[in-house]
Image 1 (cartoon, rainbow, N blue to C red):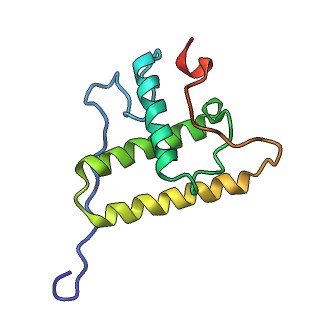
Image 2 (cartoon, rainbow, N blue to C red):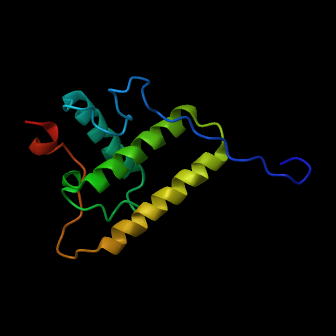
Length: 129
């Protein structure tokens, strides 16, 4: 802030490879990739471990729903990028606001019968076994 003016939020670089055949880091590469799946599973487990209360409503078998898979993977990649190269504290606030919005979405979905996800080893259908 200078002279009562707030500096605009800096755009976070988009983590997309320059080749058109590659996808954003939070999306599985075309054709599948066991290494990406193993790494991303670990990142989602770590995200849940870091924010267990906020992500307590993540449903078991979230990986069978594209919306939840993409959002959880995107949040995990975003968190890693903030930890590795975050420079603007407002980015941290923005991340937490989006995390809270996602937690709200999870709670609104309800489902009652569906059990909550317990982080652990990836299931065979995720790991590609």
